[in-house]
Image (tube, rainbow, N blue to C red):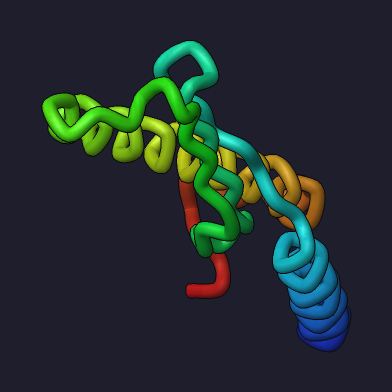
Length: 107
């Protein structure tokens, strides 16, 4: 049986590593695209949109619905990439703990 003190120390080390990874992720960003690069969205790994770039050839009042759909698709693309990056970074911290896949920390 494992010593409880050793488990507590391991938990504290994991918590520290998680805080470091979260701070690192705060400074990382991803770019999502839609429409073959006509719409680009840059956002942080926490989902904060930093910049949206729209190709000037898209701006037409009769095409507003398409523009809205492209922006939505670009945002969702960036958010998906951010989640993938976050999962990858956090796996490095929790990899040796034997936690079930998909388990989110902190609880």
